[in-house]
Image (cartoon, rainbow, N blue to C red):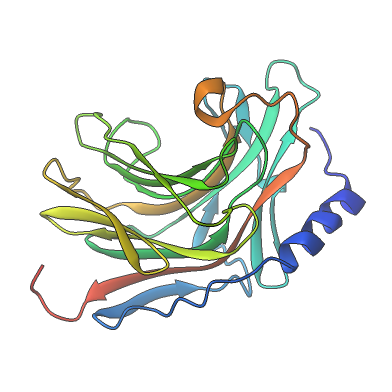
Length: 244
């Protein structure tokens, strides 16, 4: 296993602590059901992944999930093992959630080739039934909204941001109903899709990894490792009324 350089990691913590934070307030039309501000990392709430991912280029390792000062850091680093190449990190809730509003306050990881995310997913062992918010490191001023239906078909779209997601904390949200999915940035709706909506309950996921798709996230040649995505708060809301 490649060890994290502690002085370097604490330098990352300092930079993140100086990042600007969003002032977006929680929506009034929803009832808060679940919230975690990472004042602790409870084993009763979260599962920490230990598995291969991205055509086995990346291995998610528990050692790369770090909580510090009420912030969750997901770390990605180079590996000394040529077969594994990179170490990433991932956590998910033990509990499954259904239709509702999923919100995260986070700062994406910097660096070409790195993908950091917040998403909902039924199972890691099968394609489909997934709703994504992703950041591809080559363009810190862009966000990717995607959905995979139960047949494994995806529907991605990229949107421009007026800030660098790797330099500031902002609120990102997914509104999931039986008829539609909407995505939000700081409470402002950015995308809506109708039809082919996942139906099965999902877990909440967050991860960071390196993709071999240079056209999507960029080449890692100039990327400085380790890198980290930072998460301040995760919330799930249900509607106050039954009307969807």
